[in-house]
Image 1: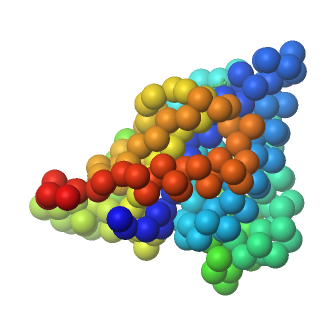
Image 2 (image 1 turned 30 degrees about the horizontal axis):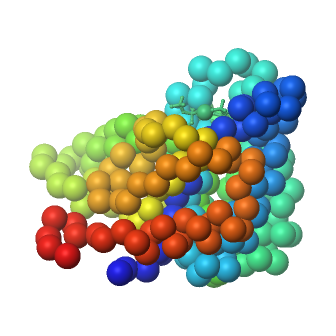
Length: 227
Ligand code: IPE
Ligand code: IPE
Ligand code: MG
């Protein structure tokens, strides 16, 4: 069985976690951030080299303005605020998604986080913010059109993604019981394994990552060939 090199998490259920406690949805997002820290530690312990997390989709702008504002503030302040911790853990941050319509202050701080963690080599944390699978493919194809390509193939499209050096995802997992991709990693998910877990994201911890790794090793990946 191949190694679990690249894990991706659709961090879902923050709102339900808060609702169950009679708290505002935003409290769930803050708790989700704490869970993410535990997951990063878990991934480091399990030797996972790349972790991609779905933080905000191109569809999440449909949420109430106050919730969107709160999430943008999280991306602007909290992630950069964790820079010391990220450096001490050896986390290298990479941004994935369309930065053109994010608040400039958020983009500035996220790029600063990328720059200030770029030499860390324990794990690469890819933050999918204002990410959409359709948008990723559209931006890549448009950049090829601008360069005058008349014919393209899959590897050429992928070469124009935000972080083409990051290997395709091996295992996409989603919390909170929903069984769909919600426009996440449409292209790179072609042969990824998928896993769905009932536990709400704010309740995830290191043990959950251990469980996920065990589940992955039970999968038989054939890529169209034979086992
Ligand atoms: C995921 O949790 C976080 C984001 C989409 C930003 P949700 O906010 O979708 O939580 P539920 O699905 O409403 O419980
Ligand atoms: C997907 O979750 C996006 C993120 C986790 C950031 P959603 O909660 O937005 O997805 P749907 O609307 O249930 O498909
Ligand atoms: Mg949700």
